Length: 163
Image 1 (spheres, one colour):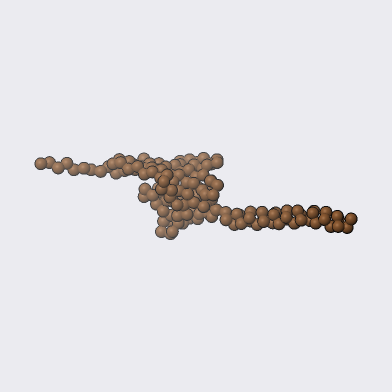
Image 2 (cartoon, one colour):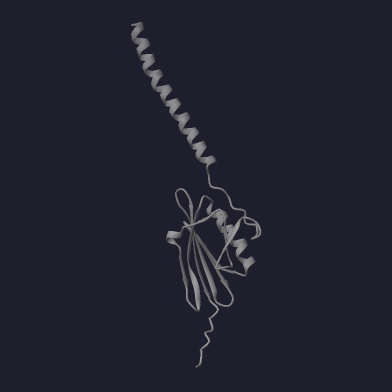
């Protein structure tokens, strides 16, 4: 009888230990994932610092974002420059939105509107006829930023050669 009680006691104790160890490991891994949480971009830095990259040449982009060349498209004609610039990075979507809200006006871009839902959209305009739409989206392991820029290019003057 004593042996049966020991067996039942061990049978109940062993699963309890495994459950406790499993919960401890689960808690540790969630703590680790919290410590690996996305970094925040400082939106108050300038071009002279190392936190801003420029595209076209007056659209600032935080250096924490890396360009996705595969999905980026630049269009350039004699009268138009623009395209879609795609960036990814381990940053928070709110810090990216804050960065653009603060930095874009420094380059002459006026905010025209914003939408904040599952994705954030920020609109900007710049005289004479430039426009930018920035889409910011949280993905599973990174933040995706798409920047649509359209601006008139200075027309090229071609001299005709007369013979």
